[in-house]
Length: 281
View 1 (cartoon, rainbow, N blue to C red):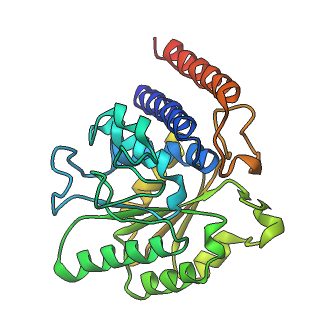
View 2: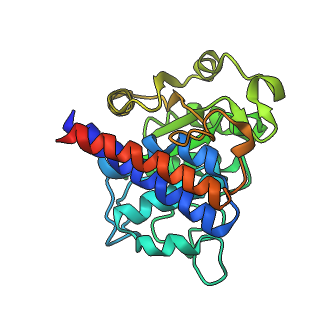
View 3: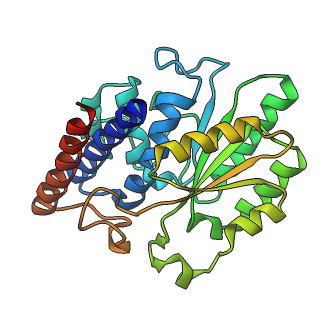
């Protein structure tokens, strides 16, 4: 329990950093960044075999943020994990900094794949996992996709390939927050039942609460134990998690808070951090 509280604390620190960075940049995607933060925190602070001091270590586990517009989440977690100074986040989307609005593997330490064009990241993750299989490497590959993103046909081509090659070293999170830029996923392009669809594509499917650390941890353990199938962890999440006026609001898919809104967001997130600290005592 203490470990999970510590992870939760890190995730809320990262949420505050991400919203601050988007506010400073006056552009970005806070909603989906906040919804996937717990899974990202679990991956980088507990699950993945990585070395921030050696980002290009050949034996490291790989991660692909397929929904690349949520780079503020990835950058914030990477900063807290020690890949680069937290202060660099202030230069998100700035010509003076090294972090563009989508993950950039050339200029940002710790980023394994440049992404942004939706649907393509999963194919890259499949390629990484297949490369490990064919070369006898033991590293695992992880990815996060969005529930709006899976409307892209390339997602399903990648899903077929992963099953064909029995990529049990591939574990994908589907951030199912129910919203995309134009509104509810169920209205824009209904995709349910996602569990049955991925099962039909011969994936190992696990459904969880994406903000429950015990469930995330157990799902990752089950993914490691699964043989001959890739794993899809469908996690129910809240878009804008942790910021009262952003939660479950599609309008916060891709815009920055103004000064007044940021002050409220900061108040919400700092209150959550204080509550966690009280629980940790």
